[in-house]
Amino acid sequence: MDLKRAISTWSRERPKRWIVTVSAGLLVALAVILSVVSLAAAAAPSFPDVPPSHPYYTAITDLAGRGVISGYVNGDFGPGDPVIRQQGAKMLVLAGGYPVSESDISPFMDVQVGGPTTLFPDNYIAVAAEHHLTVGKTATLFDPYANITRYQVVTMVVRMIIDLQPDLLVMPPSNFVATGGWGNDPLHGANAAVAEFNGLLAGLDLAALDPYGNMSRGETAQVLHNALLLLHPVTTTSSSTTSTASSTSTSGSTSSTTTSSSTTTSIPASTTTTVPSQSIPTDYAVAGLEQNSVVVTVHDQFGNPLPNVDVYLTSTKLEGDNLTLMSNVHAGKTDINGNVGYTWGQTTPGAWGVEQVTATAGTASKIVRIVQWVYDDRPTDFISAAAGQQKITVKAAGPLDLVRLWNGDVVSGYLGPAGNSLGSGTYVASSGVIFSVGLTWMSGQVFYVGAASTNTDDEPNWMYNLVP
Image (cartoon, rainbow, N blue to C red; front, side):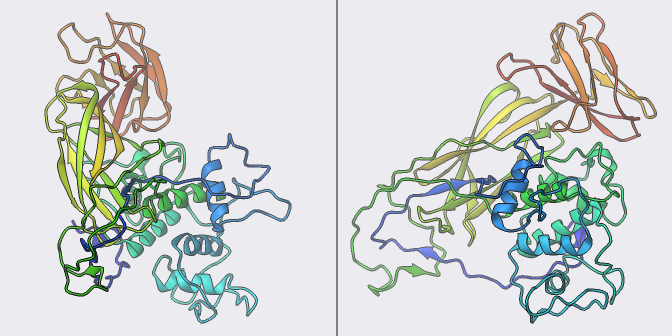
């Protein structure tokens, strides 16, 4: 299914852009920088009611540093306060980097005109409406002071990403089930599923939050922070070596350093690159049923994107059995923004474990993803829960079974591997374990069991099943 049609009819075609490649006659060797979805903390004002221990501290301080959000006159931020519609429109426009001026006229009669001294609220709302990020209650009414719901924010953020980078979001597989019923709404459910699958809802307790409820300032900051992390990966600092190259021009003109040819960008062999350590994105996927995707960005030492560069992926096993690993797999060539995406999966029955993926472009390499492949135990049914029940059963496994949980392991139930535990119990080798969870299972719902296991004990950390 076409993502733009499936999510929103508001997306628009972008003008075609020519790929520009660097010719072989460059005088300065380029240091290649590989970046993935990561966001450096910017200098930002601090808020007394948002301490470092606050769950949305990173998102709030990042957006405040970017000027997307601000606090109250008393210095507080009010992370739990609701967001009204006109505030949400402004935050979205600022996060998307859209230009705003007095020439942007709001089509809604109930939106106050700020006048020549401020662009808020009418000019921001006009831009949001122009790019179809938000729509009014009617063609002429916006309802600017009504609280905005979580579903509405999620839909607007998905529309924003499609408007800015139409091919960035990945459509979830047909068997993907959004956490906590977030994908069930006929209007917003598809957007919520896409948002969760692409990491836009990371940091939110989806199992506990009502998608129809009012979205708080802190939650909105978290989703916009995730969107910026996806839209604008931050490059790391790299050292470079300057070298002298021949002044002979391959294009016949000594003043020309670029060409619209499809020739791959040349990366001089004398380039030296150092990549400082940083957190590595970790994803969860069900082996044999789900796929994982990574977007790698290639920049030079000045932060400029390098188009048409070949990127290769290699993976290693940190733990597990039957994993199919990548060995110098060609992910493709970078686009005009220096980005290239790649999607892969595990097809071997019974595969499970931790896969670490490294991207290479020229002489630069970087670990770009760690994937926890969840073991699909459904053929052997080691775990089960029935619709209408509030308990999970983890059955005892025999000595020849792949799932060899240790006696005394603490296992927990989850709606998604990266979510919060819904309940836990201690596994007994002879009888398994039954424990209660904080919700009633629905037919067709996905659930997971995570065992208290490390990445060095050669035991599966996760198992997966569906409520029959």
